[in-house]
Length: 322
Image 1 (cartoon, rainbow, N blue to C red):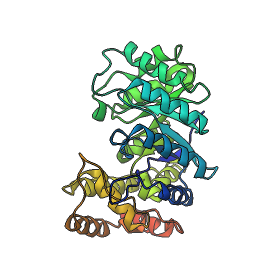
Image 2 (cartoon, one colour; image 1 turned 30 degrees about the vertical axis):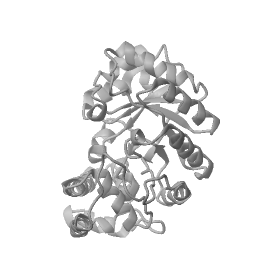
Image 3 (cartoon, helix red, strand yellow; image 1 turned 90 degrees about the vertical axis):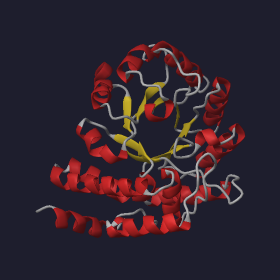
């Protein structure tokens, strides 16, 4: 299984009382389909997975699998510190006809070796043997930072349905070695939005990210310019991505809170965040929107009816001679 294009990591929509807003999932799915993303990575980091209960996560994943348009691949994140919970979510994802499953490493009692991590993943993957399995490498969140090349060497013969890795780290050498392992048979999904162009240069075909929720037209254009050999244009657009991410991160609140507030601006209100995260204040939201307007965010943000590509072209023309 090879996944191409952008995979958005959806926010888990919450109501004001912090219960899950299951009714918004169909609207989210239609929004992503209208903005040409290839799929969704459900209940991952962006989806506040470890702040959700087991029953909630199973129900969220099942609804996504039922309402997502056919062109939208649904990958279900089943990672947890409890191995039995991981296996149950994997089993239920298979019953719901998900396209694939993935898991982070446990992050409280962490695996002490690559072999331990492989065995943890093997047991989860074996609970859904009919689904492709992806390991989700995100050491900034889990604290688990083994070489993924070593992981593939040990896992390739032990995890029968291992499809690849969601690689959310800056070690581009390790990423590329994984791509070349066993003649490139594993699918390496790039996970750093702000350096997507680097991943493309090293051969990435698919990418999973949080900012694809609200800026997919920008990233689709980066991919298109790269494929056309227009590297300078692609660099200009990647710089726009960096500007956007820097602004979102500079607001004095969690990145997820600021990002959810952007979705509300685009007509998909995903509600608040759960503790221990804190919500964005009205003043912070106003500052965020003001700063994003100044850098041209609303010229390339995701919308249900238009990608505003002419404005993206204007961005390029202003910043590079063509």
